[in-house]
Amino acid sequence: MSGAGGAEGRRSRGRGSAFDLVRSLALVLGVVAVVVFFLAPQPTPERLPALDDGAGARAASAAAADLGLAPVLVLGGAPREVVGADATVDVRFLGEDWQLDYARTEPVVDVATWRQGVLSPGDRRVTVEQAPSDAVDDTWLARPGEEADREPAEVVAAAEPLEVAGVQWQRLRHGDGRTAYVREDGGTTTSVSATDDAAYLVEVVELLSAPASAPASAEPTG
Image 1 (cartoon, helix red, strand yellow):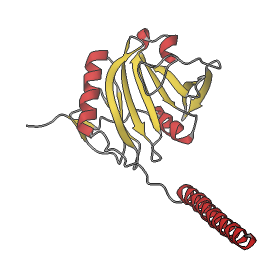
Image 2 (cartoon, helix red, strand yellow):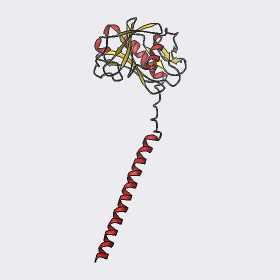
Image 3 (cartoon, one colour):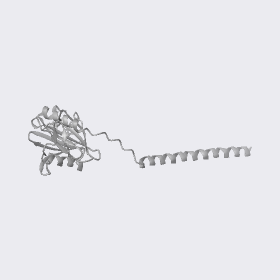
Image 4 (cartoon, rainbow, N blue to C red):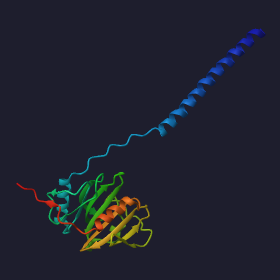
């Protein structure tokens, strides 16, 4: 009897050892899979095509007519002729790997506003907004951002005067972390904002601080 009982015990221990081995192996493989997942290069989402020059030019020309201002149109790539832009549109070029993401006129806290989003080479968005100065108030200034209907963010510090490329701006820092550079010129208020006060934001502010160049647009010919 004792021999049979001993054999059964050995079989039980054997089954237990095999189960423990399988469980340990599964645990090790799970850890390896997690490590490989986080260390392996992750696929980069495909970048959407830039809004083409013609669409941007038409939107900017409509903003000029609807808002009574001379809107800036920020495009990526080398300077070139932009066909179809109204003569009042101030076309600026940021250089290679920047691109125009969207451009439209829409109400921002009930103020009709010309808005465009430009993407940096690192896919960080800078929002450029313009509106007639006599329509702009503190609520408009308190909500720069990607969504026109977002709630105003608390301004966490007084406007800070700042000179960029020889032009005076006001820098506003918001409770949600966004930074906006704002200036008023010729009856138009311009806000340039991003999620942080980084070099890519300053690059756009510097571009808009430069004197307006000769019109880089042309009407379509027959």
